[in-house]
Image 1 (tube, rainbow, N blue to C red):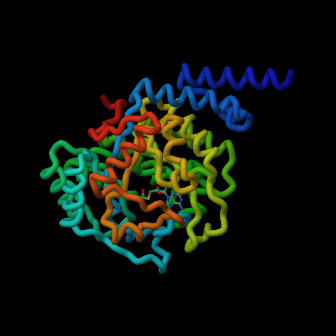
Image 2 (image 1 turned 45 degrees about the vertical axis):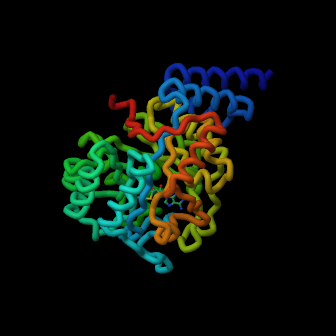
Image 3 (image 1 turned 60 degrees about the vertical axis):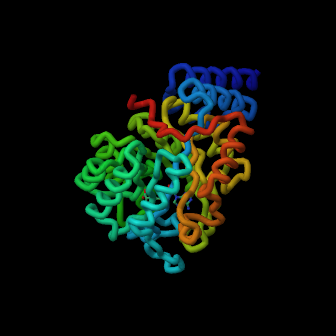
Length: 355
Ligand code: SAH
């Protein structure tokens, strides 16, 4: 009898979430804590169905360029944090970034994602120069920037230069944990940055890591509620993976099962969101990409960083370093996606939230 009631309650909540795209916080907590494997299958089928209804079975491809691994920040989980002396630091020149974009464009990419550490070398005028030069040679492409926290003015200059999107994960909405992981920063300023990005009409990406130390259901629900309230156009979520040169080296990685559950809930809370199947998911599970797509992800970001630098952008151990710098590799990705029942879409793939 108890079992029957439980399955009634989980199905009721899953259907409510599917129909209303929201649940109360205590309902989310109950669902995360109690969901059975059987009900998870149902939840996943509905989150995939939601992605299908907005984006059909298309998967957008973005060319990811990790253009600097210099970083002034102290993020305790991240392998390229300022204090890690074992990193071979690199920065890619403007010319090389432009060349990389031009090669990616020849392969069909229409979105370039420039991601890096918080590198003081890339001050506003340099970023503006790079962004406007990429836009000039590729007027129809979208540019995504992901270089951490900067001033409103700095974001504004990048927007005016032609940047369309900005990724800045909030990392965790647990204020104390945020402080523990970032000794010299605070959650408020991260949130302020996200609000500024929204104000400036960037297609904005927030997100968090799954399985950070001592993470509890209420922490996940706080992250989910924050996302639901902020309404970002993109959400990046992946498991925390330990890095041997960080203080978190001995902490265990986030698991695939919680990661898939979070991705599925995010798709249902924000039906139109652009949701990448991240490299971190593929790193902890060889089948991770397919599994993430099957619960409602609709973006992948193949790495086009020149090979010599690619291996130095190690945010965590065993990071998958597969890329897409040749037509052959794009073909391979297309085939892989088709074999899962998806269509590879290389158009700009703007968020449907802003259209
Ligand atoms: N400097 C930029 C880009 C950071 S790298 C910024 O601050 O936004 C992109 C993301 O990788 C981070 O936001 C973080 O969520 C994730 N990341 C970093 N270290 C990680 C780790 N050890 N395991 C999993 N994800 C990690």
